Image (tube, rainbow, N blue to C red):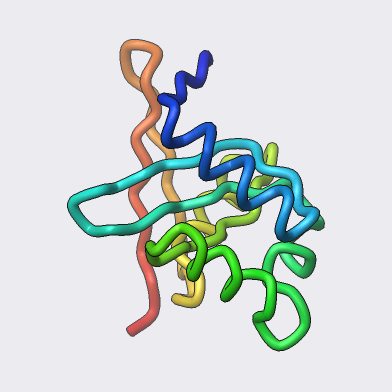
Length: 109
């Protein structure tokens, strides 16, 4: 799958990586919600957050946006669980149709 980023996405990744030291696999910029979602490399979550949230707070201040961090995983079910954190995922059912995957996720209330 090819990921296409616009100049704002590339800028956000550059700022994030330089301030945190964490590697970014992908980024979604939602201007309507004034939010950026960063998908960081597996194992880089601690770097991204920083001690006491120092790194992520610097990024939020510089970008002037809310920033959400999701840890990447090559395992699709683990990645989906990471997307739903901090909710506890009870089950994930994956259905494939016409080369597309649909995930049904059940979380505990």
